[in-house]
Image (tube, rainbow, N blue to C red):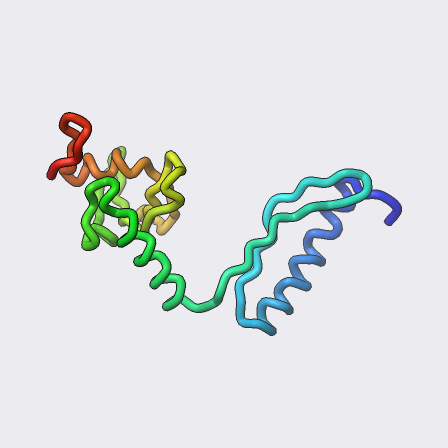
Length: 137
């Protein structure tokens, strides 16, 4: 290839994904090829590398929840709690980056799809309210 365009990106991606599957199996990790940007001389893909250890991932999620849940007056036991939003039932999976607007991750119970919500909105559905700028139960 002398230069890159959309056709070259589309041609290379499946081959790179196949090569990543081999590496993932070899090292027992998860490799996800994300979005890319390209010019005529280079292609930049986002690559997410994750440990293939559910216990370690769960420990990280719980640790993050326990560290930040009190910011929105959630309690540690709210992790995994079900709530209703816009007529649908969800289960709290954890907190994302605390600087993000949609910082609470949840799973819709009907189809197991993941969604992000504003933690304050979910807190209100659980009966946690804001009074005078302070959270109260």
